[in-house]
Image (cartoon, rainbow, N blue to C red):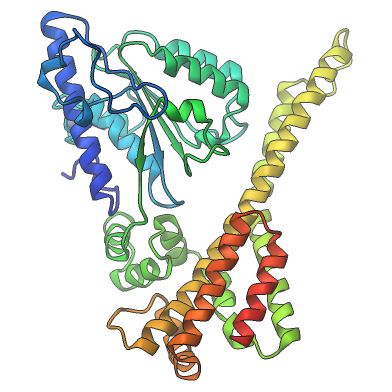
Length: 426
Ligand SMILES: [Zn+2]
């Protein structure tokens, strides 16, 4: 029976840190049971995560605080790296009766199954997490753990907290109840994703892009995908577990990828370069729209129902004034989510494209590494002959520069057009 960390693909360092923390947490519980109520070493502000306990206070059970446990964590990493998988596994390890995340005891199994009484999982699927929901959550999280171990609150997509909800959470993190642990998941610790004050109270666990072999192994083992397909999809997805699974299973996703990889062939002139730029932008927009439209409509309907839209009784007018504000807030959030989805889709396309030029470069150099895109390897080889290593490198750099420009808020169309011209001219 694999333990709770088994599905955390290719994250050896993070897993080692989480195992150490779970062991330290178990030690804190043992010491506490013997002579005093247990408490965690509180992470101070401004990155003082590794601070020693205050003078006069004994180090609990001889546990090294730097390898130890703290009460607030942020899991960050590129999409597909397994942030929420890591948070859930860690929650299970904290509830594990052996303190290891054995995967077999009731603590592990109920946590992984989502039914542990002391683990609250917040997945802001519909509306983002509002302030009242957060307050209720914080209040419940402060109660004594019924299982005698920890109260764990897992917040997936913590970047989708409203500002007010973030403040409510911050208060709880600043003055944590002795047995409560907060596990936040976010794309990064950039202030757009997590407020600086929350970040300063948390220990950050950065997850990396997992290697293709590890991704292929988990696709085959967990999802029952044929090993050769799993291998191809893992390589083509360049370490994104969810994307690899989609490529292995979804013909639409494969078609979009093929269209992107057809770009180098289509760049025959200046007009073609601009056409290719438009096609790439529009494909990203269409993909993003498909992914958010359904959620947007459902959210709006849910909010309208909750607000009693269409009410005509006394007080309805006042209620609708408040409702208008909430609807506006929802539209704002949906718009930012749509923008993000577009950027994500465009970025995936650019990563695919970069993979192609990287293949051309490694072939031109005769480097003994496997291509990212086995299905366009012949095309990349032709490019390698035509461009040489230098030309292939310039093109790869053009794609990476485009990603960086978009990241720095250059308008996507302008960045992509500049890239296409560079790819054409070399
Ligand atoms: Zn266990």
